[in-house]
Amino acid sequence: MFARAALCSAAILLSLPVQAETPAQWIELGARVHGAFGAFIPIGIRIGLDAKERIKAEPRGLSVTYYTGEKAPCPCIADGVMLATNASPGQGTLVIAPEKAPAGTLAMVIVRDRKTGEGFRYTVADGWLLKVIEWHKTLDPAGRFDAAMNAQGLFEVAPAPAPQAPSSTGR
Image (tube, rainbow, N blue to C red; front, side, top):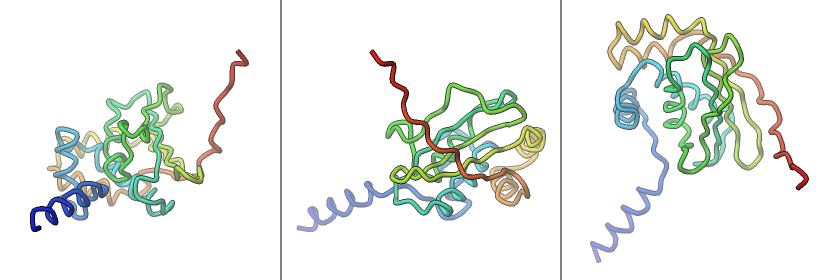
């Protein structure tokens, strides 16, 4: 009887979305999933947390499209967004767009409610690149997390443009 209850409890816990609550938990999770906790990961976490708060979707109810800027060294911000929103490539709810972010943009992230399509566009300007590289070189993971969580003007938020309907080729 105890084994059956334990198995049921484990199944329920494993089906819940992953969520960190403390900076140390975010750092541990980010390092485990990404391989290290660089300075771009907490930027994504901050964007994802902001989107979750604004949209108030159900667990696993967000979709994310990530656009990498021309100057961005990597799409690492996307991993942070993934951790905070529980969107993932495996679920088809996180996509790295083949198109680049607009000029002057380090990253652009569109987060939407999967049911309603409501969403927000997050833009990180190229001007942040040198500052983020400095965080990476001079701060430990906890310092990087704090710097990203407290940086004023780190990103701009605007309503996401309406989703585009799939085009038909008429074949």
